[in-house]
Each structure stands twice: as C-alpha cells, then as structure tokens.
Length: 195
Length: 194
Image (tube, rainbow over all chains, first blue to last red; front, side, top):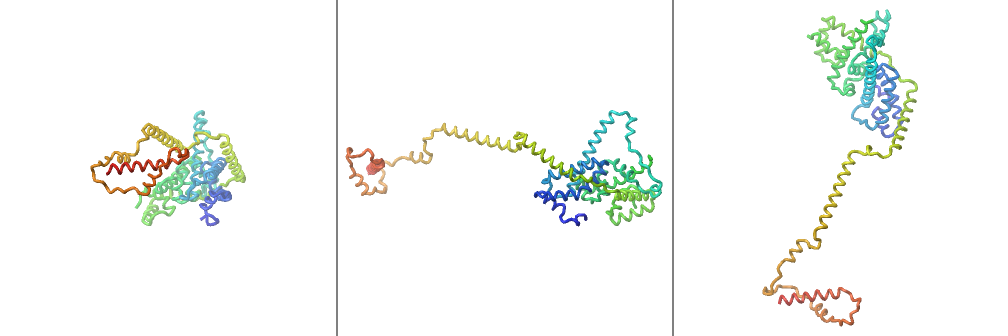
C-alpha cells in the first residue's frame, strides 16, 4: 500500500543499488529510516540507541548489498536486520545490568525501577491509556512477545511478513501474537495496580 | 459453545478478522454470556488501538549526514586494512589448500613414473614387432612362394654401377651404398628361396 506512491518498488531499488546506483540507496534510507526508528525505539526505549541501531542497519545494508536475493521481500530482510541488532543491544544491556547489580545491595536494586507515571483524572475517566504506561508494559514483555506485538500492532505488518522476519511458522506467529496481547493486558493491569 | 480458555485462544483472530464464520458465531455467543471475557476483549481492543495511535518516532535531522560519514569511515578503514595487511595465509580460501595438495600429488606421481620408466631397457622394440621378428623363417625345402621379383632394370642398373674405389669421392652420398646393401640382401634371399 505504501509502495504505490513510489516510482520504484523496494526490490527494484535494491537491484539498482546492487548495480552501483548510490541514489537508489539514499531513496531506500529515506523510505525506511523513520519506520525502522519507530520499530527500534519501541524495542529498546532509548532514542540514541534506537538511532544507532538504525544506522547500523543501513550500514549493514550498504556493506552486504549483494547478500540480498530477491527470494524474500526487501522489507522483511531489513526488518530482520534491525530486529537482530535490537536484540543484541538488549542482550548487552542485560549483561551490563547483571554486572552492575552484582555490585549492588538488594535495597539499591529497587531504586532502579521505572518511576510510575502520573495519570490525569481525565484519562482515568476516559479509560485512555497513557503512552508511557503502554511503552513500559511493552518493555516488560518477553523478547519474542515484544517483537511480534510491535510488528503487528505498531508497524502494521501482516502475519506472513512477521512469520518471515521472526523465522517462525505462521501458526506459531498467530498464537504468539494472541498470547502477547493477553500478556500486555496483564502487564498494564499490573502497572495500574502499582500506581 | 466455547469455554473461557477457548475464547482467549480466539481473541486475536477475532480482532484481526481471521476467524471462520462458525468460530465467530461461537465466540460471540460466549462473549454475550461471560462478562469477564467481554471485559478482556474490550481491554485488548483498546490496547491495540492505543498501540496503533502511538506517536511515530522519527530519526534526527543529521541522521543522513552521520550515516554518510560512517559509510565513508568504514570504506576508508577497509582500504587501510587491505593496504597494511598485504598477503596473509588467513586470506587464502580453504579450497586453495586442497587444490595445491592435489597438484603436488599429480606432480610427484608423474616424477615417480618417469623414474621407473627410465630404469627399464628402452632399446626393446614393441611386442608386435618382437613377435614378427621371432617368427620362423621359411625353410629352403618349402615350395617357392609367389614372391614379387625385383625390377630387372633396377637390378641390372645396380649391378652395372660398379664404381672403382679410387674414383669414389669422399663426399659420395651415403644412401647409394645403403641402396646397394638392401639389394644385396634381397639377392641373397631370392637365392635361398630357389
């Protein structure tokens, strides 16, 4: 639906880039930078880290342009790269945290919890969900649930595309999305209860 | 009719409209009778809408500038590495080692075969020729075969060419003597046959 606006499809652009057209690369960057930034930011919840992830993604696309074969959609390929980089960042962060916590007392550990955001009375009345609250709930989800819920509900990708990006069978993706939504609801209830 | 567990299983398919007509009917039937599941469905639907309405986060203004710099820096670093490292064994692909070993084996095999053939006597004629040589010569008692008689003119001419030894120049052609020897042999053979 998005590609209808463009003169060339993503696959045509990457083919031109593989043939040496640097302008095609810049157009790819223009098309995907914001989408990938949104995906990476929702994943790691840090603007600088997210931008680094997106830059790394485009650098990898530049370096490994010939690795792409037109057997899969270009969007699937680039989302897979971003997802893998985001997971690496999370893993590094977790390792850092483990190292850091091992030097702390249990009392100090509690101080690193997210501060609970205030909810206005109007929001409470409307039942509107605070953006920060939902973002916190997403971050608390296990990695495989987080990936599918961002790709499905924020990036609006199809089940088939998510299946290709995550390298999981279609049935697994469907059930994973369902469980991720139920899990997210439980997290939100938990976060509201702690306020 | 579905139970609560089955209802939970179908929530996402129902919201994404990926449910069959039969399952949808059962799903809606349960929804009307179970207030807990109804609340869960409402909440999940609201969460989904909230996720879809989250503000989009874009890249910073100098994103493209930074990216170009990184690409240039990466390219330069690769060039520098290639220039400084030069040749190293780690760069040689693994199949090249296999190829080199195979080539070495062929060369060694060739040299061994050559040395073996050098030890064998090389003056022996091939077996077919040897067989011909070993064939018994026909005895004089046997009836004379229809051997072609040598051309008379040539024979006489050869006989008449008796050149005194003192007149033979030192540069006389060798084939003339050879020609005479051949005919001498033939004459002997014809006489034996008679």
